[in-house]
Length: 207
Image (cartoon, rainbow, N blue to C red; front, side, top):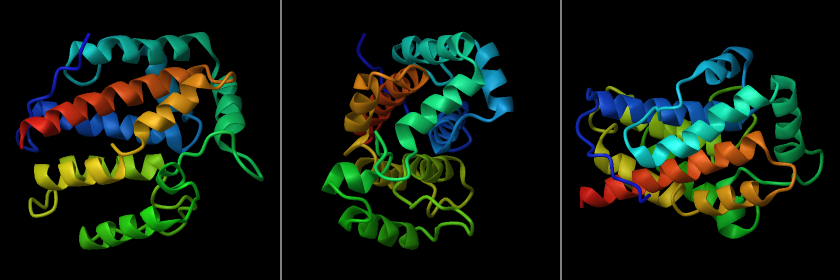
């Protein structure tokens, strides 16, 4: 099945808020092992995708099935084995690594310039750099659901997505899916890839 683009409209539209919710879920899934409350919600979630489009239903169903099949402790151990390490992790969740081959490289500098232009900065106490997948998803959620229409609008969403996410999320998803220890996160990566495809199609419609 091919991705069907979402017809983006205003930030009060139910479909827009569903997009923001998906970005929020992805941020929670990739910032660390799912919190207990979120994991219980995933286990009980309907297999219907949380955003419009039948293309997402299969990948979302895989996430729900993985949550039902695996314990939260197993998922936490998987997260640690894939994304956490004292030295080099198995899979990097940082855009600069996938775009430039090293963390804290030029793409991070460019991202920080864009965030400054949007009036955003890393919160105190946040250890991950701004190009971490979860941080970028949070920015997209803000650009969709925020109240300041000068910043939170479709053009800003499209620009940010294309420069800072679309350029590397497919590569990241492929690395996770190919990893022999990936199970829950193989499903999460598949949903990430599918959602990014739907987003890209939707942004193409507004050109």
